[in-house]
Amino acid sequence: MGAFIPSVRPVLILGILVVSYDASVQTVVGLTGTYFGLALVLVAGFTVSAIFRLSRLKNESVEALRAPITEEFRLASGAAVSLGVFAAAGGFLLPLVLSVDPVLFRTYWFGAALSLLILPFSATLLGVYQTRNRDGENLAIAVTAALFQVLVAVSVVAAELSSLNAVLVIGVSGVVSDVGALVYRLKRLGFEEGTTRLVLADSVRLFVASPIHAIRELPSRLKPALDGLVLMTVFTVAGTVAAASGPRDGAVVVLVVALMRAVVIPLKQFGLVGGRLIAQAGGTLADDRARFLQLTAIATGILVSIAASLLVVRAIATPLSLIPWMIVSMMALQLCMEPVTGFGFGAQKVLTSPTFGLKSLVVISLGLTIPALLTLWLLGLGSAESIWAVVFLGRLVFFSSLVIRLANLSSASQLRR
Figure (cartoon, rainbow, N blue to C red):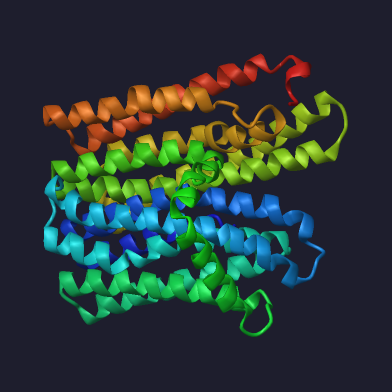
C-alpha cells in the first residue's frame, strides 16, 4: 500500500487547489508533479538494489548494514547530482515552451526542487526497511508525510493566499515533509550515536573521490525501473504537450495523469507480489495458471469498481468536473484494461521472464504513442481530448499485445521461467 501514497499525494493536492485556484496554478503544480513522478520511477531501482544487497543480512545487527548502505548512498549521491542538473535545466528551460506564467512555474519548481535531490536516498532507505520487515513503518511514514502536505494545501486555500505565495508554500512544504521522512528513517534505523552522520559523510567522501565512476554505475540502477520509466515518459510528454497547447488543456491533462498514475504505476508492484506468491505456493503448472487467473479476476473486480466510481464521482464532484466526459470515459475503459496491463504484466515478470512484455511496451510507447503526441504538438492539434485519445489508444494496443501473449502461454511449459 505504501507504493500508492507518493502517487496519491499530488492527486489530493490538485483536488484541493481546483476549488480556489485557476488553470495556471493547476497546470504548474500538476505538471511539476508529473516530472517529479518521472524521477520517482527512475530511483525505484535503488529500492530494488538495496533489497537485493541487504536481504541476506536481515538477521545481522544493524551495524552490519553500515558498509553496504554507505556504498548505496555513494551511488545515490551520483543520482542526486544528476537530478540536480535536471532540476536546474528544467526550471530554466521548460517555461520557454510551456503556456504558463514562467515566474509562477519557477517559483514552484525551485521551491520543491530539493525533494528531487533526496529521492535516491529515500528510495534506498525504503528498500533497507523492507529487508528489516518494517513495511508498516514505511507506510506510516509515507502517510504522515502526505497528510502534512495535504493539511498545508488546505491551509493555503483557507488563507486565500495569492497564486505565487500558494505554490511557494506548497512546494516548500513538500521539501519539509520529504526531508523530515528521510531524517526520521535514518534515525530509526538504530545505528549507534553518530553513525548516521558517518554513513552520510563517508558516502559523500567516496562519491567526491570518484564522481565519474559513480555516475557511470547509475544505469545499473535504472534497469529495474525501465518499464515504469517508459510509461511515465508517455505521461510526461502528454502533460508537456498539453501545457504547451494552453492553460485549460494543460490543467485537464495533468489532473488526468495524476489520477491515472496513482493507480497504474503501483499496480505493477502488486503484480510482482502476486507472481511471487504464486511461484512460492508450489503445485503443478496448471495450479499456477489457475492462481494467476484467480488473482487477475480479483484485480479486475477492484479496478472495474474504481472505474465505475470514477464515472459517479465525475457526475457529482466539482474537482473532476474539469475533465470532459470523453476523457473520463477513456479513463474508465483504461482502468478496465489494467488488470492485464498492470497487474498481469507485473505477475508475469516473475512467472515467465523479467523482460516479459517489455519489448512491446517500448515499441508501442516510443515508436507510436510519443511520436503521435509530438505530431499533435507540431500541428497545433494538442487539445486535452486528442492528447488523451492518443495515450488511450497506445495503451489499448499494448493491452491487445499482452492478451495475445498470455493466450500463447496456454502451453503449460511456458508459464514458468
